[in-house]
Length: 133
Image (cartoon, rainbow, N blue to C red; front, side, top):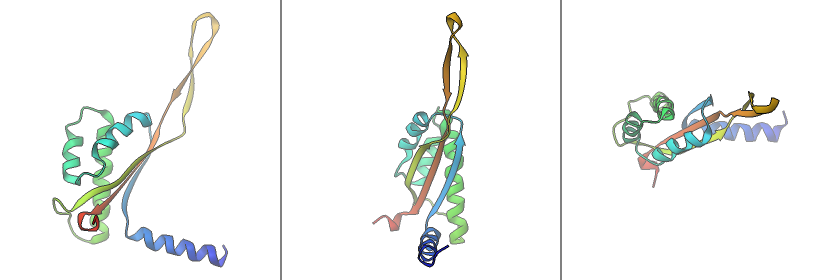
């Protein structure tokens, strides 16, 4: 690795230490369905978001709830203290496409229709509310 590349990697590594996030990869549900849940909690205080997710009827909400608890735990572990109510909010949440499984379904007259089983990656960043300003 070159000197310049190594220095920029060190800078990125230091910047990453002050960010608190969790990733969920290869979730077997379509990104479109997951984005509906992500839009519901974007920018919301974390304990309010946990309440929204707990009482949502969507299957994707269960996975995002577990991921959000992981992000909160990551914040608590890096700061070495418990998160108080009203202290954290979801600063960023995004859903990316993951690799698709392609299957064939039998169709009339000897044909086959392609079925695309989509999956996604979800990333949540949490931050302190005092850092919001």
